[in-house]
Image (cartoon, rainbow, N blue to C red):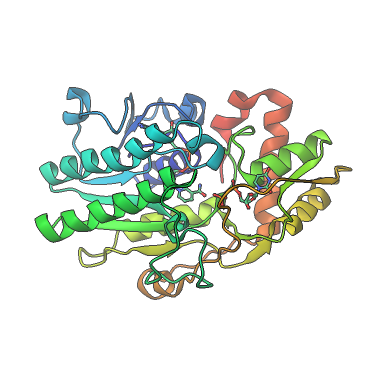
Length: 323
Ligand code: NAD
Ligand code: UDP
């Protein structure tokens, strides 16, 4: 597992250990934290290694017994992946290349955490996997979008050239406990602003849409994809098709927190996709998977988490948070 100290990765680590698997996690803690995994560090089947996924594999990683790799290492929040775009691109591309070569040397299956961002600002709605996307290759989001697209290319080239067992998940906006309060993503930002009684910062007119998937649903989908036969490669959309405009999300968060915060409308983000909603027909048919946690329920659980974080400090709540 790479990127296991992050939001999504920490829940994947937990789920794998719950299933009796052993997990070696590689993370550089650039956007994730040890606190996210503190509750797992004493676990017999768990090892945490610090390192850069884009660098050559170290002796410590080389020594690990591995039969399946989840490649999640990469910043996912636009604010964070745009802060050092060259590093983001290298993480996406060199990280994928390094892990694919490592998987090949072990005969291991490898799953890529790809993204709905490969569709860019989509002109087909909802987005099925065969839609090739609409990405600006030179804009500020490109380090992530094109990085993830190139990583997908590498995955399918390793499949064609070396017969590697690859699985590519295209993940749509996911939320839940262990999002970082200051990471800039919309759900964590709105909840923290609402709990602190600050203005809710809507970028643009708020009519742009997203479709939010609760983390436990997403993790179930990722594990199911990894368990599929060799012939199942994806790319496969994983997300919740329930679509909502950002301004409505703001209203919902304010209502669920009982906050007196009011929205403020700021400049729209450059190249911000206007709409996003997954077509999950393939995941339903191949995995028998569909999300089950409605947005309000997932938000209430996430609000409870941020309540604890703001009351006791991130470290205190981060480790204990269960989806
Ligand atoms: P996150 O930022 O919380 O976690 C990413 C983890 O990767 C962090 O622990 C970070 O320290 C680590 N990392 C970053 N660069 C690294 C590097 N060069 N070497 C080693 N470790 C590195 O993000 P997340 O939301 O948990 O996302 C996890 C993965 O899922 C990412 O690949 C992301 O692109 C993908 N994804 C997430 C979402 C979502 O909504 N959360 C949507 C689409 C795709
Ligand atoms: N957004 C917003 N206010 C914020 C953060 C984000 O209005 O404080 C908007 C953002 O412009 C985008 C949507 O919310 O339209 C989702 O943003 P996020 O950064 O969570 O993820 P994205 O889907 O863009 O990768």
